[in-house]
Length: 295
Image 1 (spheres, rainbow, N blue to C red):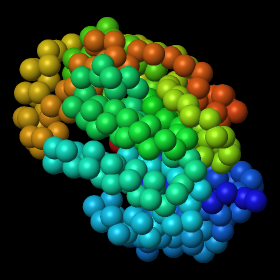
Image 2: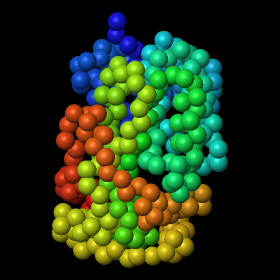
Image 3: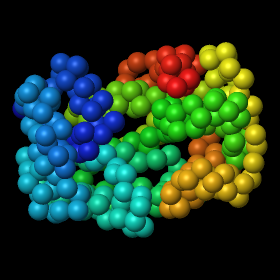
């Protein structure tokens, strides 16, 4: 008997890619996939392919109970609720509790690398969710997703326009991974039927310092890019001057701090093993993204 697979946050960047990979695999019938979102209208294209589109609001337990009904394996994609302390964890715990009430056989969750030691403010949200999943007694797959290559777009286009990239990451190293590679690994894990409880850390195959990344960007774009190494306080001041919301500045700065202190320097082959494919390199990703980098 086929299992029913459920994806939360299905209208998000990662959720859509996971759905696309599930459908493209040919291993899962569209009718055996449940895609959830606050706004099911945004899932109309998947519903037209036979996917079950259901409304789910992580702040509404009743909606989660209705959405999760009949699901065998559920992928909980972490929310982006960072503006209110504690909200993200409350949402995740609500989803975990609903999954248990629904009698799901396996819970998958998108976490982050090394949440036990990370200095990023939302790391405890991920660790707390992992612990709550384990406490249910339900088989689980924890996917500790590394830093997306796409996240470089938050800084690089502006940095290239000025020729200077302000960073507090020092000589810290980071193995970026493309969102598409994480999606393939996630889709395969969701459809695997595995009853094992395992934790994976999904990273790229090669780690780089910010200076090495800048050199790759210059090579790809033909434009000079100087890394200006600053302190955490200097970076925070620059972000404030640039008009970033106050609540987000410590989060952004913590990304560099976390890298500098070596908390995300790991390299694993988990993503390739789960996806069954070779991962895109950072240089190839940057080459394919040249137009976006240059604005």
